[in-house]
Amino acid sequence: MDQIKIGAFIAGKRKERGLTQMQLAEKLGITDRAVSKWETGKSLPDASLMLELCSILKITVNDLLCGEVVTMENYNEKTEKNLLEMVKQKEEADKRLLKMEVVIGVIASAFLLSMLLVGAYLQTQSMPVWITVLLIAVGFVQFIVAVVAALRIEQIAGYYECKECGNRYTPTLAAINFSMHMGRTRYMKCPECGKRSWQKKVLSKNI
Image 1 (cartoon, rainbow, N blue to C red):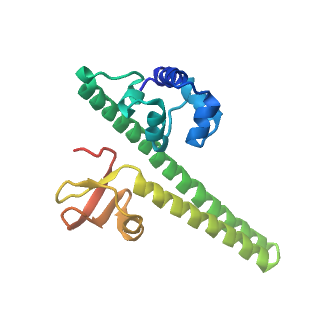
Image 2: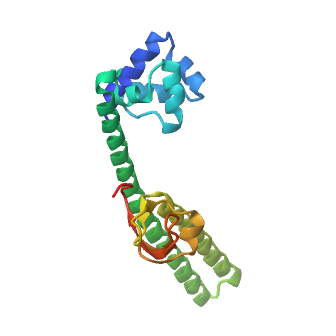
Image 3: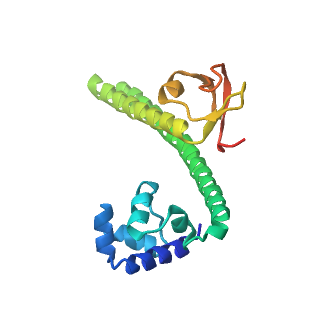
């Protein structure tokens, strides 16, 4: 998507409605800096704001994503292009999340190990036991927090593909938490066919 074009389009439609950046921001419950970033092409409106923004500017979501008023002649073509672009952007975002999951796991494991080693060393130096216990507790708490965050990423980033019926879906957090797994392949029940199988993580919704 051309963010510069979309930003200029938002600015033009805002001015057509006789609104300042501050007035538009107040209607959306955001800051005028956010509106400024849209209009300069530095960012795009959040999906949660798009419908309300389009309603205020009297345009469609398709118009917004194209950065121009879409005519009926090329409406379907533009819609398909926007949908493909949004799918591509989600896949890229999911890739970044999955990389972040690995980083979180490595850092959390390293921190826990360092706390255990420091605690063991302090014991050799005749330090009070409570200090060692505190260090180990801190290590385990941050490790648990990191695991929860990683599992959440594992749930929302991409999809899982049922080996039996090919259905691709987003599992529940409970299914992620309690399923056996090898890397990013998990043994889960498919909500479509109801069968259990080893299901691989995939980034695309469509087969």
